[in-house]
Image 1 (cartoon, rainbow, N blue to C red):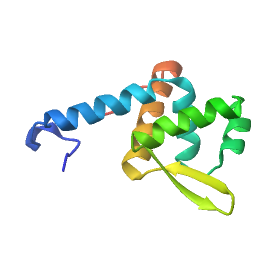
Image 2 (cartoon, rainbow, N blue to C red):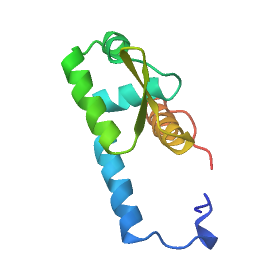
Image 3 (cartoon, one colour):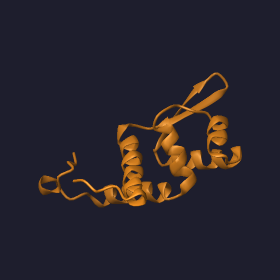
Length: 113
């Protein structure tokens, strides 16, 4: 519905703006952003996520619960384990673009249109 070129796209509705603000609010936490980066490329369980980012398992579980309630991650059961993944290509693209932007800011890479 929304193209990258703003010249021909309708203005977002208040509900759409609120949903985007809620997503950005959740992603403004470094731990959640790191979790989302990992979940953008692979399914993982709580234990592997906690180990990968060096955060206690209970904390990771709390962050994942918030991300799931916000619709940013999906889950599926595999035996006794629950596997988490980024919900869809929109969420994966949002995470990638945010971190690519940050890379340009931090590294001084030239900007591109």
